[in-house]
Length: 323
Image (cartoon, rainbow, N blue to C red):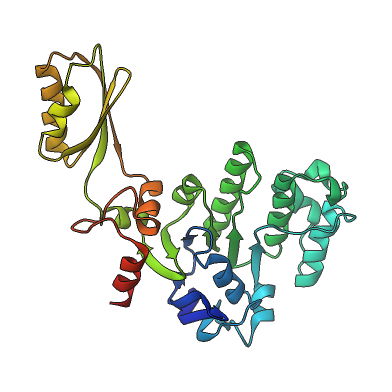
């Protein structure tokens, strides 16, 4: 079963195109990371999927329901944790969750859901005194009502401390283990990499990349950042290393010699050159491209580079998608 499907979905606000020709395909049971910088079109897309914003053109379904004609059925069938969740300050956490239960016609116990998100002791506290992180926990409890087949989570870790973020990841994994689909939008790349099977990257209203994280990384040059910790940095070693084929961006940081190398063979050449220059290597670390690098490459042209390409700019990416 397909959890989310869109075809040429677009939304324009006057002369501004927020989302253009979006084709999404999210399989049931997968964790899909929906990424992009601010203004990329992520929130507009989510609002169209939920039926809050009508598309200007194109079509889409969520759990088989049409996003324009059956939006109420969509919202009753899924769990949503929206960004900047607004709460009624005079209502308690329990009453918020009970409202979600009543709205869905579910039979959940609000106290069980609040305990699951770590708010058992705050069940009777009014929301007006809640921190941002506590509000996120209440919103997650409301999203979990009725064991929905699909969870749409927009920046779920916003305002939550590292321990809370780990607890949230554990809950999301539990939902995946029971067969739910998770559509996950976040700026925290560690969260995305820990949770998601596939990712889609939005930029300028378009989906500019989509695949597993490993498959997207494979599109880039096999460069890595090599750090050699030495007893003393040899004179002129930076110039020596930058003259080696496949080595660039050499810098000295205290006792560390840091260089970007094109392939494993270049690493050995760098190490030999440092030792030949009189340096005694005490430690070696190699750091491959991170998801942050990949995100930057697809959205700003900085960081990693696609194999055989110059650093992608927004216009270049749009042209590639059009092709």
